[in-house]
Length: 248
Image (cartoon, rainbow, N blue to C red; front, top):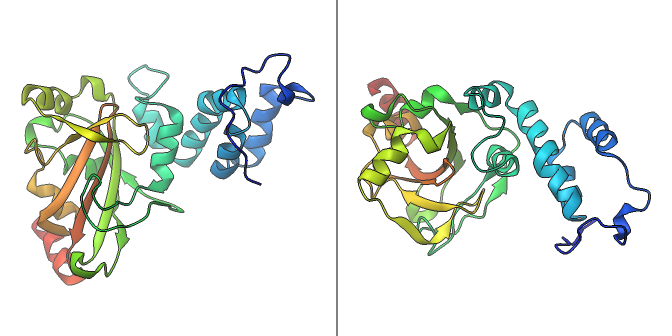
C-alpha cells in the first residue's frame, strides 16, 4: 500500500489518524517484534507528521542501533545522545547506495540508487580516507558497492560513510581553513545538507584508492555539513586490486 505524506497534519483532535490511535509504547513494541523493519518504518512515517516525528526520534534510532550496534555506540561515545544530522538520515546511509546521475555530483553515467541488503562499515578503513594530519578523526566507511561493466566507465564502485562528531573534526577545520567551496546545487542524498568536494580541496590521500582497490586518478568523494560521506571510484581488475592491497 502506497501512503501519501501529509505535511499539514499536526495530530490535533480533528486529525483522522487519532481515532483508535496506539501509544508510543505500543508502537515501539510492535516494531521491536518486526525487528525495526526499515520499509515499514518508512511507510509509518508517511501516515502523518506525528508518526513521522516518532519515527525520527525513536524508530530510526532503534533501527540503527540494531543494524550496527558497535558503530552506533562509538558514534555516541562522546556523551551526546544524538548523531550529526538525524537518525533517519543515518538509517538511510546504512542501507542505501546513492548511485549517480548524469550532470549530478559525479557528472558520470546514470546508475540508479538502490537499497542494499547488508553493508560492512569499518573504522579502520576510514583511516585510509584521511590525510595523515587528520587521522585522529573517526570515520566509518563502507565497502564499495560494485556496479560492473558500465561501458567506458568500466567497473564502478560507490562507497559511503559517516564521521564521528564531524563539527569538531580536523577534516572540517581543514576544509574551512583551505576555503573549500560548497557545491552550488547538489546536496547530500541522506540529509539534504550542502557538500564539500574532497577532490577539489586536495584532501584525498593515495591510501584511499589502495583501500578501495581502485585507480588512483579515478576516485572522488564528498562530505556534507553533517559529516556524511559519499563517493565513487573506478575499480581495478581483481588481480590488480589484490596487488594494490599488498602495496597498502
